[in-house]
Length: 357
Image 1 (cartoon, rainbow, N blue to C red):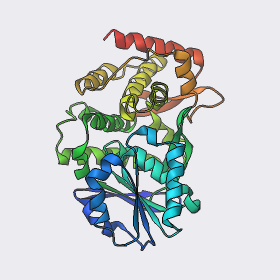
Image 2 (image 1 turned 90 degrees about the horizontal axis):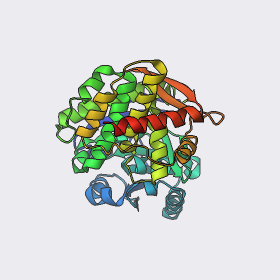
Image 3 (image 1 turned 180 degrees about the vertical axis):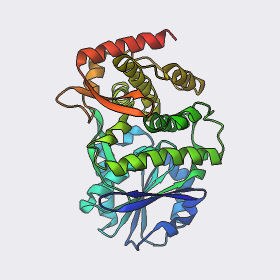
Image 4 (image 1 turned 120 degrees about the horizontal axis):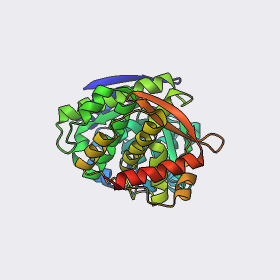
């Protein structure tokens, strides 16, 4: 097991990565809680909920199960969980455990951040993708007009990452998680990026997977500690997300997984970067790796005006100008404001570039 310490303005917390950690949950509880609410989804509940229930030290343990998928990260699910927390009698000395992927982590974390003005929560990610979302304390729900627009910065008490739970992931979920690892490598570590380009993501050992997760988490941890509330360098973690989030919203949440949409967004960011900065970046190599690993790299053959409007709901947008994270080189991210005409031009040329391949 490896522990990575994250220091936030309100508390420091450990990210523990290893095997069978879900069966050792008692050792990660630093205080006694009056009650515990486990929030999970229907898929994860069938696999791992009993393991958690059997290893908690308190009798007052409750569970809330939401439908699996991005569509649960909405105001209705948030309100229902708040209602259940009240009905279960949770108080300010209670704990929420987010057992699941990024959707469950974001949703349960936002419930914890706002229930009685904030109670403790622990992230127990069960997907590769959640290595990113479970670290850094960003919790949120979606609005139909944009992703993660309603939320808060609220660090967990701990992140318990049992890699055994990753063996049950579908190929779509594996793809989704590795897209975020590619993103982290692109913004901070060229050697890690080159290593990932050699990986068959469906045939990695436990040891290799732990190494990849540790690398990605350490990159994110360093950035989060330097800029907890996304006032500066933390925005670089949104590389690929401006178009990625817009695609998710425009196509309908769940049509593409988050990572599949981000993969397209990463290629788009590289495409724009090459032109704006007159540099040669690994567009072709990354496109080949995505296709080899069966990512659905579709073009942006959608209503461009609608897509641009969705991109304008991105949290980095300033005064109606889209702010994209771009690359002057691998591991050299920069934020750049673009107007609608520029975005339209790049979306059109990006579509043509993908169609030509």
